Image (cartoon, rainbow, N blue to C red; front, top):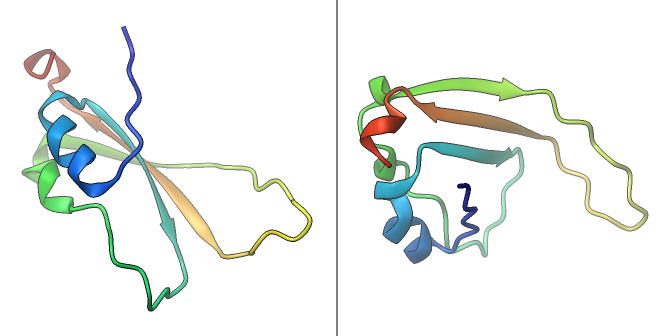
Length: 83
């Protein structure tokens, strides 16, 4: 079974022990008023995760803000330990 979690920060922290795959979007822009970010310490050791940058097609939407971004997929190397 699959379940999807879409933050906030406290939700990410609560579900972190159950997560075997993350899709993380990195936006190449500064937002001075931003006050919440994904806490990378939730991932634990880097050696537990395989990382792949995904090829994501941008859909043009009239009136949408345009910022460069990239999407990274992280897959846990031992998902059986999480489930």
